[in-house]
Structures are given as structure tokens and as C-alpha cells.
Image (cartoon, rainbow, N blue to C red; front, side):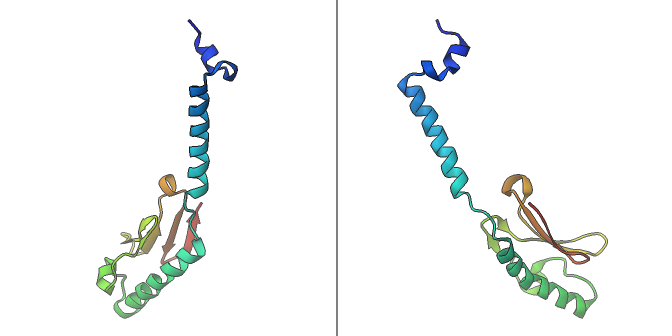
Length: 119
């Protein structure tokens, strides 16, 4: 009976073990190469359209809307999900896209500080 250490030694692998190892390696490379990466300038451009509408609403009403639907907009969809919008307890508007843990980035706009990214 072979030991666990012997099973990990590539010199003792069977052709099935080699096929499995190569398949896993190829799959990892394909996933890495074909995982979409965000085009942050393009996403900011899309977000700027929303920011313009939010700022106009704030100028006209003195506060930001509670939801994008109040300005006649459905949250736009992207490869990374919909744009999220909310107003903080302090009255700051936040527009956000992406979850760092899941997508590898977070792009967000805050009414007091503008655009920021975590990537």
C-alpha cells in the first residue's frame, strides 16, 4: 500500500492522475483569462449619467431622492449586477457597483467626495 506522500509524488502518478492535474490547470487558466475585468472609466461614464440626474434632483428639491425610481430611472444592469443607490442617515447620496469580495472591485460615488474605487 502506498503512503499519502507517495501519492503526491508526480513521478508515481498514473495517466489518469496526470490527466486530472492537467485538466484542473487548464480550467484554472481559462477561468483566469476569460473572467471579465471591469472597464472603470466606462462604468464611471455610465454612473455619471445617474449622478447628473441625482444632482439635478437635489438642486430642485433640497435633498437626494430615496430611490432611483423617484427620478424615473430603473437601476441599470451590468455584468456585475445593478447599480445600487441609497441615501445615508446624514443625507449623503451613494451610488455603488461591485462587491470587492465577489467581483474584485467596488466603484462608488458619494455626494460629498465624488468617485472612489477599491480594486
